[in-house]
Length: 390
Image (cartoon, rainbow, N blue to C red; front, side):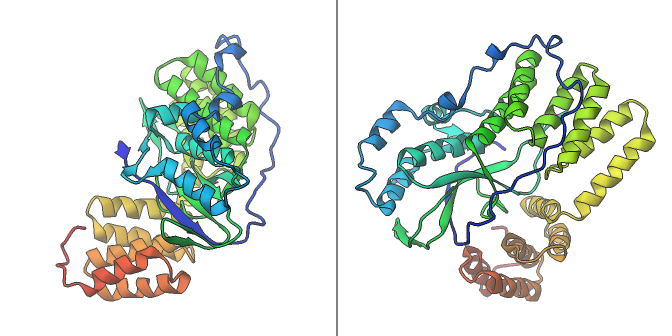
């Protein structure tokens, strides 16, 4: 994705009960581990919770200089935001492809969404704020390197405030808000709350993927193993380990891992796609077609799939294609603000002003405070040529 200089605080007002979710974990595949083949040593995993969540010493000392008990929640939140987002602009930039712990991320002044969320969480925790990390659904994006698909999900930080507060002149209602360094469709929604162990498992998964990209299979195996040990319900680690096994011609074991990842029913399509590819290379075309059918069905029924296609079409200047995809997304869901906003945008670019107006009405009915309302209203009222790009 390259560098993106993005940082946003989203207001979120909702009840917190029921946000956490727990998956039922099945029995792990028999003969899952092949330690001797990959020269497994526990010492290969050099990161742990202490090192990953440890703050840079300069940041830690700065935050420690404030009396957490004497400072109001509002004051501590202001301090947190000021450390992440300074008066001259964003202190930290988004950069995919490398996951780091809190201290290294601050030193680099950049990181992927997981790295930046870990840093924000560590800073919030140091200030005594009530915060948790969460995983949210966004349109599926695959990280494809050297013919391999790597899977992870999007994470951000939820910070709770029990009363209405004012930050940088913006009123934040009681309930909480989300800090997200790569805001995108769906990232403002509530998601699955993640413990430090669950985040650490995702960190291990990312590090393993980096080792895979450099053909360091021994370290990749050790880190995937560590990820699964911490979070045996985390489907992407099984899917990614399956690709490592396939690269070593462990096709039966790879198939078992993909079956397990599919059974865990994560939001990614990668296990279904990976299973179809694995069967195809073995000449098992009929079985592969079964999984391709499942993949197509799942995509057809997933609003995030159509939203992703629509956003991509908008980005590439194809508003008519965007309309078709976003109409499909709108037809299979309700109350999804980003779909209505982007569908209105697609209609506007496609010259369908009346249809765009209807999406604006729908957006107001869902959330009259949505920032996209002002944007769409301005465009609909302007006499900008239909072919304009904005």
